Image (tube, rainbow, N blue to C red; front, side):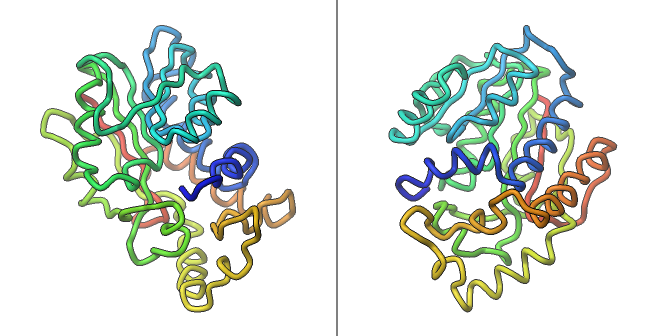
Length: 254
């Protein structure tokens, strides 16, 4: 992320329609894998940024460890979200024993690292046998935009590319695109934005040109977008897979 963007991100993660819908999809998927109220379940959440996904995961188990690499973001999150077991570290060299966690997560993380295969191998290493690894990533380089640049992404993924990153020792449980209903509007907006630089021109001292600044207030538009996006959760829970989407959701069993 750009410097200080995580301060805005703290608010986005908790209040923006996109994150509310995305987090519902993620939490529903994980609950379907491991069940509810699993207080003995040991969870590792890697690349937590401002920590809200770990707050959500605490509804499944309070035995949670969170990892954040960026020093300034770590300090900010440690001060503002002190109860998520936060430690500073890198996904490329997780400071944990082999086979330590029942559930290992990274939500929109591995696109930020150059050696994504090493990052996922580390997640596999610290996951217990019969445990799960769950990740989300942005999809399709065709919708690459300024949003990816300011978030320091290396790439966006296709299903085959993501699937190839895991070793043969893990069994693929589920792999699907999501944010399907809004894919075409997002594609069209980003193509236009790449030409006319809308978000870059509209940014202020406090905003760095992310797509998240659009429809970021409580409004009818935000409510509609949330309803459309979050409606995918019920289909994904039934293991219905979307043929394309803005993001990918994947889970493996070790």
